[in-house]
Image (tube, rainbow, N blue to C red; front, side):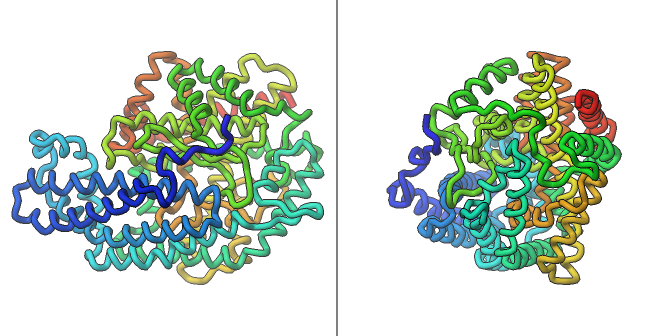
Amino acid sequence: MKTEWILDVIYMGLDDPAYAADVASLEKQIATLEQEVYRAGDMGDKEAVEVLLAPMEEMERLFRQLGLYLGLRQSVDTEDGDIMAATNRLRRIMAKAAPVQSAAKKALAGIPDVDALAEESGIVRAYSFLLKENQKEARHLLDDAVEEMISSMNMTGGAAWGQLSSFLMSTLAVDYKGETSTLSEIRNLAYSPDGEIRRAAYEAELAAYHKIEDAMAFSMNHIKAQVAMLCEKRGYASPLAMTLAEARMSRGTLDAMLGAIEEYLPVFRRYLKKKGEALGHADGLPWYELFAPLGEAGTTYSLAEAKRYLLNSFVQFTPDMADLMAEAFDEGWIDFYPRKGKEGGAFCAGVPGLKQSRILTNYDGNFGSIGTLAHELGHAYHNRQLEGQRPMNQDYPMPVAETASTFNEIHLVRSALKDAEGAERIRLLENDLMERTQCIVDIYSRYLFETAVFEQGQETFLMAADLKKLMTEAQKKAYGEGLDADYLHPYMWACKSHYYSEELSFYNFPYAFGALFAIGLYGLFQKEGEGFVPKYKAMLAATPCCSVEDAGAMMGVDLEDAAFWREGLAQIADMVEEFCDLV
């Protein structure tokens, strides 16, 4: 079994003639679109829309494939200068395309009746939702020349600061017990069964951030300042308002979910205090114990064992999920192990041209790593449902992006719990509650932190000390007495890459949405059995072409009603109750 992903099926390298041909084709499509925008004013609506959509569709396909390849290469070797240069070249091409795309979107926004035109044109029918969304977005576009300038300056602005933060985090050397380790290796020690190792790793991790904290703070400030400035220029009320618009999610849904979470925070704090007591801590759980396994160390799994475990579990949900998982292991979709220069964490990226995905993990053999694989393979399953969609109908909004992945996590644990007893049952319950706490309580703290950064960053430059203070304040509000206030994580703003995207703000609440939406959907699966699966797959397939609320309606739920979110949180409360009784 290969332990590193196969990328040659996309391109053989930067010197691959196919890569050069696609770059040239992309530039040709931009020129074609520019010509068609110029001509469109003299055409009828149907002809104009069709001649604009054709090159836009091909541009999307090429941008996606080229950007994906470069991004995947860089994620496993952040010090590769050739990839950085190629990425910058692609960004320059994207900057060149920005005013042309802006002009085309403005032309398409002028369609008087999309539904009427859809009856006459197949491509309009396929993109009718996109065209209607484009009409909303067009209200926030600036002059074409300004859009080009924004895109060009972003290369040495927000995007460059984000690239710097990624480089710093992936190359940060951590001094641990007289040796030098990578940050990913040290953070993985948080799962060690040895309490002394967990604490020592935590202290080494916090000490290491001091080397890069100023550079990371500058990155954070400049990225957030750019986002805030562009939001104002584009006429959005706030960065959060822009994020919700891009996520196709109402403020009513967000408020209903966050309100329900706030009501249930005491439940999570009870779990944390109980875990702390079990580990000998009377004043709440220290941060370095958040991921501590309870009792004896659990089983560790080789990759072959992890594959068997996943397939045996998910064939009980639907055979096509198990088939996809086998394909991912057997055909080189996954880059498993940490190494120098490789990003930490995990992600999944779709490869539409191959009807495949690529998954990055930092596998360490514990059950949590199997859960991570299940999570990322859930993203791959979501991607598979989109194979019938056209190139510009491949992107789904942030909140539902975490639905299939979290659904898989839930299924994995629920399947394991069926026959588990004693210490093994406690371990499984605790592992699931640990993950749910991260997806809900820690995500809530990150939401509070990013809100504070945007608010205070308008008035002052936030130095590293300021960011550490904001982070610990957010953690205290979210975790309360569940954590030992003397052992928090003041650098969580540094180690989470989601804060350093100039294109995507508030990539935190979607995880809470995904966790609770998936719990609700899993309850439906338990009631409906096999009849649930076709409806679930149809909903996943529709996500690029509907709002978050419409996706909920397809499953028969009202996402703006706090009662739905309370139902999922109540299920977690039941698990906390059982955990506390057993411990």
